[in-house]
Length: 376
Image 1 (tube, rainbow, N blue to C red):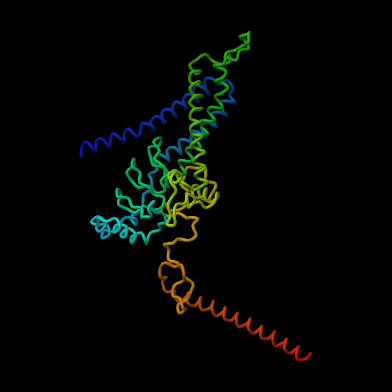
Image 2 (cartoon, helix red, strand yellow):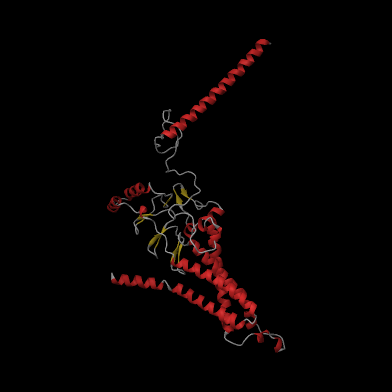
C-alpha cells in the first residue's frame, strides 16, 4: 500500500513539471520584454508606453485564462448516474454480460442517454462504478470520469472538458496573441542587434543607437522562443476552432460517437452559430473573458437526431380502431390521456364533418346538374 501511495505522489509531482516550465518561461519573457527591451533598449518614450500597455493587456488575459484552465476542477457525473444499491449488488454478483446489460439498461431508461458503445451496449465505467453520460469519458491520468472530456493536457496538468473547455480555447487565443505581439515588436531590434552594418560610416550604423549590454542576448532568445511557441500554438488553436465549429471533442474527432441508430460524427452538430454558443454562451460580451458561460449542464446535450428507435413512439391512432398498434412501432404505446383523447376525438369529428360537407357539396352539384338537364 505504501509504495503505491508514494509512487502516485511522485507521479502527481512530476506532472507539474510542464506547468512549472511554462511558468518559468513566462516569467523570463516578462523580464526580458519589460526590463531589457522596453526600459533599457527602446529609446523612444512613446514607443515604450505603447508596447508596455499592449504587452500587459495580453499578459494579464493570458495568465488569467491559463490559471482558470489549470485550477478549474473537471466536472464529474452526478449521483443519479450511479447504480442504486440493489442494482449495484446484482450487477457485481452477475457474471453474464447479457444480464449485466439488462440491469444497466433498466437503470438507464430513466436517464437522458443517447450514445452507446461500439457494440450498442450501455456505457458503464467499472472504475468509477457509474453509467457514463453522453460525451463523458474516463481519464486514466486524473482517475475520474470527466463530463464532455476533450483530452488530458500535460501543459495544464488537468483534464480539458465541459467545465474548462472555454478557458482552454481562450488560453490558446491569448497565448497566440502574446507570442505574436512579442515576435512582431521585437523583430526590428532583433535585426538591429544581429544584422551586420554594411555602411562604412560608423556614425550611421544602427548598432550605435542601441546600448551595448546583455539586452541583445535576451532579445535574440525572446524572438526565437516567441516564434517557436507561436508556430506550435497556431496549429493547435486552428484545430480546436474547427472542433468548436463542428461541436466535437478531440475524442469524437478521432472516434465518432455511437448513437442508438449507429455512429454519427455530426450527431451533436447544431449549426455553426449554435455550436459556438454551446461553448461560449449566448452573451457575446463574455466570450473573450475567462468566465464560465457554456450552455447546458454537461450531462445531456442537444442532438440533431429527430427520431430515436428506443424512445416511446407516440402513435396518433386512437384506441378502438382495427389496429391497436401502428405499423413500425416496436413497443405498445402508453394509453392516451384524457386531453389526448379529447384532441383526437375533435380531430376525427372535424375530419368527419369535413367529409360530410364535401358529400353535401357533391350532392348539391349533382342536384343542380339534374335540374338544368330537366329544364333543357
